[in-house]
Picture (cartoon, rainbow over the protein chains, first blue to last red):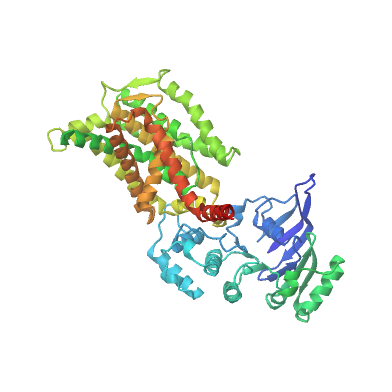
Length: 261
Length: 310
């Protein structure tokens, strides 16, 4: 499905701020995979997503998605196949535009001069009702009036209203309060399961990294130091993750945020 | 001053306000929607006036309008390409195009800096003939301006609700979201600035035809005047839908001209127009900013006076 072959990326090469964010990373994601990704800050998790989504071009290596080489495909073209959510709930929607206008942009349907039709509205209302947040009755309100949780739920809907080939979730519940985070995560699970979307999710929560999905990657220094799935993963605990990290990186995983959550 | 003079002054202000409101609508698109401060407005306005005048003088008053708009599209296109494809800062792109257009405009006007349309038909003189004998015989300028503004207003509102229009609005609101909807933000910026350019040029073309003359300085300071009108419009009707706000913008332009006309009657010299529009822009932008800072300023002042007391 998604193949990364020996992908490298260095920021600010040749300066004092030189930082190797990805170093010869190779990854093969299978169709229908739900992968959770963990790792310390600066391990290259978000950089990996940026490379896949095309926020920048990689220095070397190749990326292939659904049989097409997308190494040099610009970001907005990859967006046809890739949906993406960020930690910041404000990032995925336009605050000055109404809910239906945001959804119409995301729906990617119709020609350049098409207007929002009645059937579009009915479809938006139906999808919004799934969120169970009362947004289906607020179609013409500006998105800027919504709470962070509502906006992230809307962004999730926008990213999946046309089911993408690949969904990238970059700690998309980390900025929400625990109750809302739980709800958005449940929504994510049901939408991903319903449309059978291949999904990669970065999380700082070791337990949910274990509970969710079918495969877990651990990253350190721009590479993957652990890739578990199937029976091996089923028998693992959070303590096993910590031990594997120590074995893989040569140091303890001393990240308060990860240990506390 | 008798009633007739007041009415005639009011009408002149209304005509000017309506004609210039087309430039304000252009800024509504580029400044409010796309979030691009397009400083090529002055040059583009003169470009429309010059191209329109040349076509009018050669005997095609109607053709002058699409010709001027096409020239405006070209100007907007160059500004947009500079900032989206060639890495020129958006402010600088506008200034560069504006400067370049000065030479181009004089070249279009055949090397002269002044053209007269006294002896040829303009869209206004044609409307005058059309309305001759009716009760609106004296409102022929108003009629042309009103038709132009209504047509543009309706087209713009319809356009901003299409998928492309939504994409243009979102580009100024959240470009990340536009890209994740598989739309190239460079493309939406180019389209938006081309449309804005066509409105500005149309505005210039109509002003030149109504004055029966174009001189190279016709557009000087237009960007500030239009910005002042835009901000006044935002104060009158800043909240509401796309159409309401667009109407507010037109009203802002008319109000600006009315206030200016009144000021002229109180013996303000005409050359003060540009200073006044600058001051309005500064006030309209800085007052909301200062309001936001006020609590902090008050707090600091309070601490200072307390210290003085001790």
